[in-house]
Image (tube, rainbow, N blue to C red; front, side, top):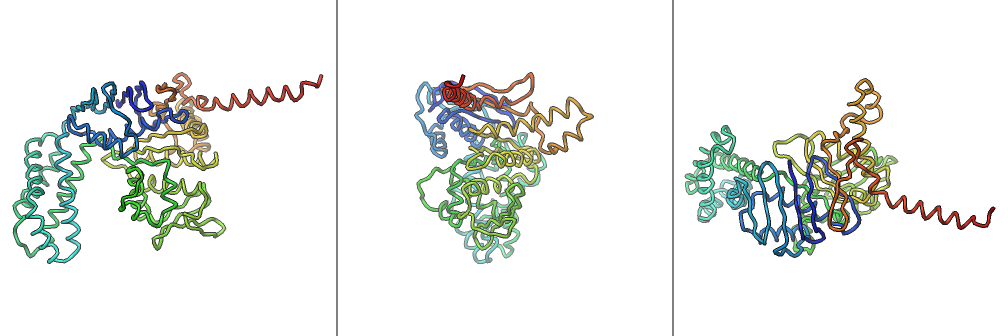
Length: 445
């Protein structure tokens, strides 16, 4: 079980909630739902942070633009996989076994990226780079630290992986200053170790995080210069820049995407993003409607990262999927996302103000419920809702945030998400409408 406890942090007074496969946070503006979603993203991404390192934690808060004051009364605890991460009285602590691994792996990434890039170039470039990195004793000291760490902690990792890669790391280390006519031999070792680094780094995390911000429309508006936005010191939150990097990677990876429920197709060519409609009309993404500008980056990032089930699970944190979208499109979007998440077996966190988002998810839960209760009716259920979109009620958590606290909205007896919790405004509007009608026709006897 995964759970998070937060007390006296930003808009949150006292919150404790369980995190499941699909999580929905609802509530009014500034109720704290986004703060909790972002904290979960941080913990899943930096679960192995070293004890006492509060400055790193504050830096991560800034990355997500939630760097509220952390005082002696602030208490935050995150639990998963029988491990915990805690902030109490401004002191950070964790019992995660790989917390000492992250700084070692981080210090090696830049080195191996350079070596791998050089492999694509000339032998002279590789030789020159070997000379350069050989003189960076800190880099090679980190490699030695990695060797020592792995040899002392063999029982923590897959034995086959270590059996194959430890000799490669040793050979790479001993050959760091040797001249070689065979640059392929050297760089094959580099590639092998780079794969190991990624595996080890991911093992120190709970999930790979894909945070999809409400500000995603900004990236559509500057779609042709995303790289410039990311590489320059533009004054926007780092989490938005990170999403820009995911968008850039996604559009290069899949190039085009047919979107039946929008009656259109996305295409990336000549460093430009295009939307082609069923009537043949074609526009650039930055010239399209605000709804398309909001939904296209989201669709691309989800589609490109849920193609297959991977060893390292991902967690998509999606803020306000309903932005600028008509209710029927909101429904189709939720079904699109859930279908991909079901396939890849990843996790999902949604913050929303929309009753249509909740109702759409509730329908997917009811499809699963109906087939379970009446198996003989399964084919009829499939005709209404395809099976790949069904959602098991036990995989879902839904919380309503209000005045710094939260409560579950789930109706366990009827196995529904409790969508009516977010639609209380409709009831209020209905009362107002009825009162005005009474006044309008008061003179009619």
